[in-house]
Image (tube, rainbow, N blue to C red):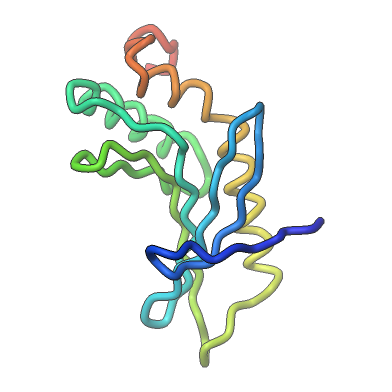
Length: 131
């Protein structure tokens, strides 16, 4: 699989962009302290009035998946999925990195439609049949 990493000029973080169902999702690699954060940003923003429903949805999704990591930034109106890998002596286990990247892909495929529906205000949490 060819990844084609790019450098985001504002944050100086490395990311890969992958299209899924006609939408580009960016997976950022952010080294911090003794860890590597993998963060997939969902390419849409939500209005503050949606934050309650969306926050509850992300909580429900986090309870249902093996690697919880859904988050939101209410101030910026962003939804993202984050996992963290330990860096031992400045190194990351390549197999573990592959597993985390796979979890980002799987979670995206499984959840992005319902997240978008609620984030856009088209559907209320109660209408998702997830409760």
